[in-house]
Image (cartoon, rainbow, N blue to C red):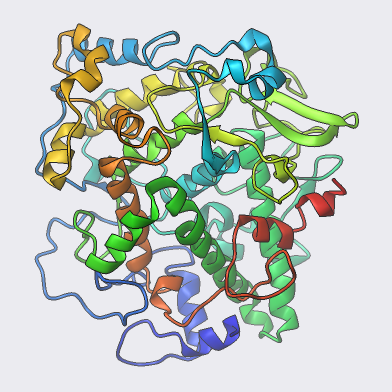
Length: 536
């Protein structure tokens, strides 16, 4: 089956077919274009593969705008009332050397932190995830949510707070507003293709004279790995453009056709590869079988703050203190670095893996991050209440707002005051799932604020995973929030692959065969950033 045939058959509703041209033109200005309004429709809250239908008439007066944040559990009270004592406690919980800090032996250096098992006794590896899972998760976050206006620790109403990303998996963090609205992202000689530059040995993001990446979302240059993933998606899109042209697509529709193919293969990876690792297949199967229970927008997808400010920040606990960026980039030797290291501040070619710099060694050898079957892949860390020490001292350049605090856990915890988020226990009660006991959270009792029984949702989600799954996947609260939002935004997007029941991946896997499946190693291979293309 081919994408072109699928486009000819696609329907934006259950009533009437549209031509391939009108479908693509609609897609260009809605679900895979500059906005989301008319292109996102209410879908049935049922398994993928069934026809779309209009939702029954409902009062949508409380429907959050797609352009703003919203709440998943609007009736639940905040986990605590704002106060100086609360803010002081949250800052203390998230401080360097505090209860969340893994206290990694950074003096051992980036290589030993990876290779010496005796250094991983507290900050444990996750045998079910590869190191790339962390950064694919970060890439997905940057496709769904970007808060640029709220102030940490100051209560803010989410329904009046803009989300700078479209709340659907449409890769607007890659494409911006498209060639017309965001021409700086596209090649001047070929407006269907995205700009890509060289950093020396291999590809790099396009940059201005100050080394700032010219991309739709500046967060995708926070570190070398996420920048490399953005570059890989750019190269993936550009190769798909070549395929679309070879298939004979009209020149006026090449970009839109390519974007749709790229987006659907990406969405397939989210559902078939990423989510099962994070939430477990049983949760996904239950949602497809029985529907979403808590993320139920009556009309349009929006981004709930329980996801944005808490549950989806689980990925911070998976970050390793150091990585092997590539196998031969450092004068023919592997390039190892801390994810962040204060010693890298102000260096043209930083010693760490921060973004915002160009040098010949600053590229990603993906065999460290995804399993190409050569034995070189490394794991990430478990989902638990233990975070790698470098995350407690971020460079300001890695913070989108550019201001302190520089401890990532402190920022996460203060965000609970910003959004007046409910406690993990309250959400567990609303879901009807087992709750953690006060003894599971006893380290919070010393603050005298009852945080061990009314715990910030992010902290609860991490501890829940640690206690209930040994950190291998999210626990019941975290998994349900994350899975329902991901599957919900896809079900509510008429152009997603879930709403085209006959669609299957049409690009080849690493073997060169089109099998109807597609994973990250296939995407990287098709983009020609895989180990074989690098000669490694």
